[in-house]
Length: 169
Length: 236
Image (cartoon, rainbow over all chains, first blue to last red; front, side, top):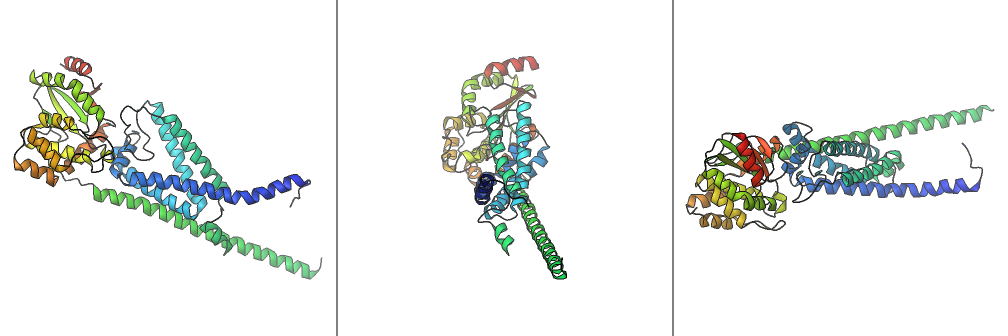
């Protein structure tokens, strides 16, 4: 038990204690929105989602199809878990794991000079007419989401969540 | 320290231990629930996809040996063309390279194999890619592949809106001599929709991620008249 020697660090710590659970709520809902939008966009075209995975040329087509079909629903489930704030740390850890895989996949597509759309929000991995790949922004965006996940892994208890309600039981 | 204080301290330690234990149990349960939810979600996706995709399909007339394309011409060099009737670049390609391709076919130098894939179904409100591709197979049964493909491009709908309706597809067929009621029935019943799925899967498996994609004698080639002519000459 250490007590702050000056006024300043103590008030700052107190302020952080108030802000942190709400900041966590914002991060949690933000990440939930990302997964729900990404999952919903792909769930309506599962064959396209399979093609998008296959476009990375990282696994046999049959495996890519299974991954492509399963992924949108896993994303939706992650979105729901984060939305209600149930098992936030687990959901955030799985999110971070997926995002690392996505960043690795996009980087490898970039490195191999493939011309594909990341398929992150649907589209079947095909670039629209006259569009060139935008790997840099896609990776930057995923790293931003990764930062949200990291925050939630460190501070999983957030306001307006099932986790915090259960904690008080 | 008095005995009483010691007792109090011991009680507190036990209480804290119990609370920690309870928290651990709760964390374990929520984790188990979350993992189960994620696994079940993945299985649902797989199940939905498996129920949507069908492996049985009917192969149209004039199909290539592997059943993934419609053949025009009988020359020795195979030119594979992967196209989507919804794709503007495919129309541009057909307009620019069409006369050259027709000449190569007329000279009996090449066999064109059209693979009408359905990559762009989300780009129309009524799955135009799938329906137009299936209707091209109906046109193959009627022996009018090449003129029907050209007529479809001439009527290419804008991206984002509804594609041509079945009635309009039948009309397009009529304009190139497909007046047999069998063609109309084939389009309306969507006889070749599962074939289109097969064509699209085969294209993905080959590594085709965009349209138009052209292979001459099995080697990917720029989709331009000049590149195709050069590749055909080299393939002999």
